[in-house]
Structure formats: structure tokens, C-alpha cells
Length: 221
Image (cartoon, rainbow, N blue to C red; front, side, top):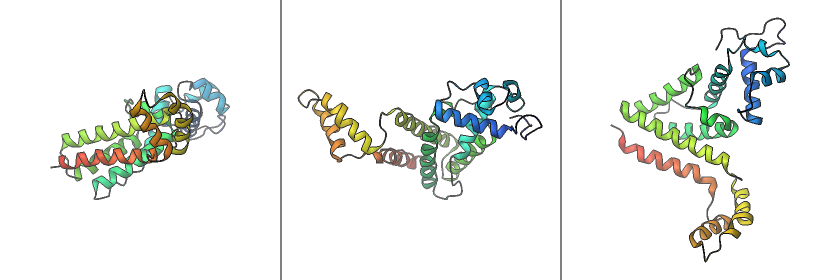
């Protein structure tokens, strides 16, 4: 990010932090596709050209936004139990990505990662290495955990009703009538289990995460 981060005269109190924070607020509300320097400048009440004193272009703006997202993910890198640390990190990452769904496809695409991004990745790798994983196996574990968290968050955002009770209602009212038991016996019983409460989707993330962590554990040196 540019060195100029503090407000200067005549810019309405702009700073790099304020520009990035407002860009995140816009992306949270409207998605990142419509985010532009002109749109951002209008919301900030500034001229579009004035923003370039704080971010050189949209790519640098996205780098800053993703860096803030990484800074919000909690990780207890000092936890001696690697599974506990990775579990906490995965749970936090999921919550952060649900707040900022636009960030999911951008998390691994930045070629100029910011300091929070790099610190987070270093802490994750250090935790895995101290947990007994070799260099290559720590890389495998990192990829697998990220793929699971990002993929689950992406699927969760795409669901019509991600919450357990709401999903049950949608299933009962919309999907179950389309699944007659004589034609779709297995889909029907799965949908019925959700509607009746026999199956609770609220625990799905933790269920899958525990399977991933358990599968990784024997691969340590």
C-alpha cells in the first residue's frame, strides 16, 4: 500500500485505512463486482482522482481489502495442540468469510499480499510444522484445510437458506413436494430427515472439519 496513509488538507479526512474500510463496507453490501474507484469516491464524497493518493489502482485496493479480511481471522499460533489451533482458525475463517462473502474467491488470488495476509500464513505454517508435519506435508495440510473452509463457505453463501430452521422450512415447502417417495426414495428420506429434525445441518461444518483433521493427524512425522 502507498506510504501516505494519513489525512492531508483538503481531502475530507481521507486515509488509506478509511478508503479500504469503505470499500469493504460497499463490497459487503453490494458485492465486489460493482466496486469501482468512481463509485467509492462518490460514497466518500471525494473526487475519483483523489483516491489515487491512497491506493494506486483497484488491484491495490483489493489487496488492502483482503489484507483486512485476513487480519480478522483469529489464530492461536501458540496453542501446542495443532488440531485445536487449526480448528479454531477454521471456525474463525468461516465466520469472517460469511461476513465478507465477496472475499472467498479472492483469498488465494493476490500476488502482492499485505502484512496481515503474510503473518497469518506464516503462523499457520509454523503451527503445522511445530505440530510434526514435514515441509511438504504441512503444505498439503494447509491446502486441504483452506479448500475445505473456502468451499464450505462458498456453498453456504449460495444456499437459499443457510440457517437450520430456515433451511428446514424451505425444504418442506419447496423441495419435498418435488421429491415423491416412489420416484426419489432416497432424496425423499433425506429431505424428510431434515424437516423432522432428525438431521441438523448446523453441525455440518464441524463434522467435516473433524474428519479432515483426523485424516491429517497420522501424516505427521
